Length: 349
Image (cartoon, rainbow, N blue to C red; front, side, top):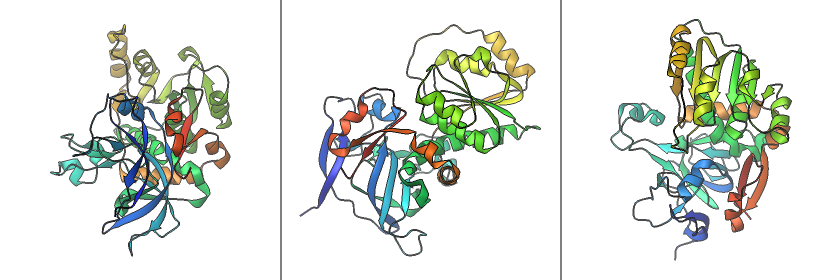
């Protein structure tokens, strides 16, 4: 008889069929951790899967376990893995393609060339939205005990850790000593990008359209400046663009100073055409020796950087990012729109 557990499952493109399913219990293979699922975080990618814009079921399945932002507690671990029962961990999302391509072979599947990677809870692999899950030790990242529930922020923090890594790599082409950064968007990704900027000792400016409430409060609690329009933002050395909003992407790049770097991490969800002044954009980049680079996903090294950043953060500030909790038994309620920053699903309820 197969032992089962509860899991949040979906069929991509069927938003009317969101279930708590009885799912086979995971069996940890050689080199794998067996993990008790504690929390998963909702992000826009999950909505894209539910609505069918991303549709890649695991082979042979008509449903998949959702969620890629994870937090769990180790139940068992292989000897010599560096993990022990009771450790808090997050699971890395992407796995290399089976060929593999050059970047995947080098441990950088976040730069996969042929697109045959797989991703937990996103593409061809079940996610972390279950009461238990197994993960190879090399795709798990240990979190400091004091981080607690905020360890569920490891995956989004890893995304912006990679963005900052790109700032360093691209900026390294010249004498780049950034002092001022603009972060567009005060959602979870934007706030975490701002947090890493503050941890670097930079003058951080955050742009969002919300006039009051928890977002401006959290930005100011970081010691950063909050802006409602680009007209009040000074020229910057770095832009981390987290919204994917077409006009804002281009307008924020125009704030770049000399030898500056913009990293785009926001995904656009609209195909609407927008007016653009290409000459001004061109001149900003050419005369300023400025660079714009896209960045998606993250490597295990970025998860480790994220774990360090979360441990270093003001834990009370981090806890304020989690604005709503939903039990697994009613997980579709996590999709209800509100003024939330980060909604999490409690997998033991």
